Amino acid sequence: MTAAAQREALFEYLLRLGDNCLILGHRLSEWCGKGPVLEEDIALSNIALDLVGQSTLWLDLAATVEGAGRDADALAFKRDVLDWRNFLLVEQPNGDFAHTIVRQFLFDCFHVELLQALTKSTNQEIANIAAKAIKEAVYHRRHSGQWVIRLGDGTEESRARAQAALEQLWGYTKELFDGDAIDEMMMQAGIAIDPGDFHENWRDAVTAVLSEATLTVPEATWSIGGGKKGVHSEHLGFLLAEMQFLPRAYPDAKW
Amino acid sequence: MTAGNDWPLWEVFIRAREGLSHKHVGSLHACDAEMALQHARDVYTRRREGESIWVVQSTDIVASAPADRESLFDPADAKIYRHPTFYEVPDEVECL
Picture (cartoon, rainbow over the protein chains, first blue to last red):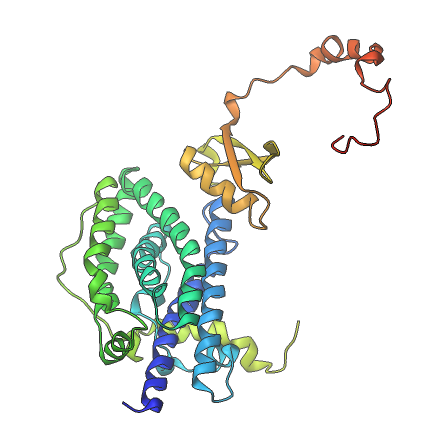
């Protein structure tokens, strides 16, 4: 494999890491000022900021690897829908609080496993970012997991909403573990592992919390993916329109 | 943001550093102890203010009554000899 192909694959892989964090962080930021209670408003905003911060690290590194004169801001604010590499799961709209929490929990359990693997990456910069990010991710998982338990094992209404969110989101989780050619190249280079390798761990972690929450693990009757290859749901375009508006309308804006 | 009104109130205490004592920093609403701890972390330690948190349900705190202030505290006013200010601190003592 040529060095150029290797570099391109690494760039793609880093975009996936960064894009997942940025899109989910942006989704969470939509709760800012609208949280169900002040305490949770701050909690969700904190997590949003953690994720946006992590995306900055990944996209900075992606820009360096690409070496085309773009920086993290250019990658964040000047790419159109088809150039985004995040999972469909993280771009799904917030819905109600249960929906946001369930989406977050499904991702957080994946995120912790992924970052754990990346701390052992042969790429030292990736290992360093993962080591920093995993501390945040472990807290995110604790926060969303505890909420899943309280919503599931809460009132009849909160339980119904949490179960409905699970049914609506479950089909998006398969994509998190479907390896492709890029993952294969990362694996060969010792940079990352096959995401399928921690599907079992993820399922166990999710199942343990869901059973404590008296929620039912959905039947995998449908699944959809494509986000990591740039095939997105209609929601991402609207998200980008809002997220990218200011730097696109006022390219030299400073504050 | 009114949904949390039926949640109990918790008092939050933060220890800034090893060796210091926990200090009251404020209060918050939470549905139970674990969430109170998480909310305290999110609301009161965002700028690395601490390394240990206590939360106590506000109703579990026993407070002195404002009406008792005179009888509880005024008598200490006339006991100046209780302040350790009547001796010289040697220069070698650094921790005071």
